[in-house]
Image 1 (cartoon, rainbow, N blue to C red):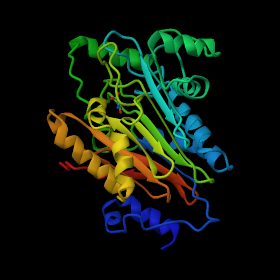
Image 2 (cartoon, rainbow, N blue to C red):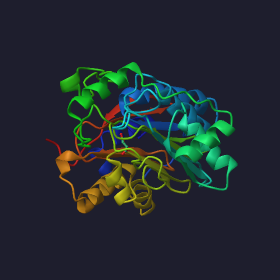
Image 3 (cartoon, protein in one colour):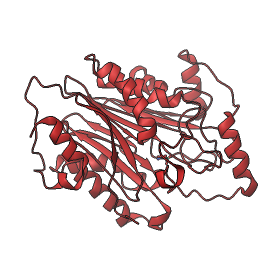
Length: 343
Ligand code: ASP
């Protein structure tokens, strides 16, 4: 089986289960570069930006930063960057994390008015002895390091969805509302006026031509969340985890459920035990199910993962989770992840 066939097989998910748990490795001179992003619609542009770096022998770390910044800078993205849905008080607060092949990591949470939280997370990793900065302190650190305060004005899209939300002001952080081709048509936009999608973090994981792994995750979190609420995305081990000996994983969905089981760390640990990325993601979703006190139809959790061999996979609790994969022979494959609940 060549790499193209392998990657297609892997994309099928269940077919992949039949494969040996650690069954595939590349010959030494084959380029292993690969990048995956949560949510196909935003993932394509992000993967392309990452690929400009990966395809030119750049590092996975630079690639994931450039990649997720595309979503952060997209004013029409419902759920990432300053254009995204605000919290229930009408203020956009952002969370982001980053981790590299040396297990160095950085993150920011509850950050306001900064366009690229991922840059701040990277600076926390590279310029401080710490892992996480939050709120005012994170903002001051960003400004001290040359980033601009962008103001509190909501994007036009976000303002519309917020006004709509205010009509009822119901605090129901139900996250299982996905872009759905049946409901929203083919290639649904990244924002819907009626606020129909209320989450869609970008988590990106990549391996570069040196075989090194890195990951980045950035989000405005759950739309219309309680002020001060922080999800899984900036928590190392929950929304993102990288172990260069084993693999990398990232997540999307109800952050609380992912935090409860240290989801991305768990996926990597399952890969350490020999499970394929697909099977590791599935087992982590099963753990979420075993531990959550919530009704399964009210929540969503999706994981994606890659291992050191360049194999990839993903799995979700509920249907309609998709992700984008780009590699030398794969131009943004859309993978509709299998889910535990299929109706
Ligand atoms: N995981 C994010 C959070 O809970 C939301 C998302 O993935 O869209 O903040």
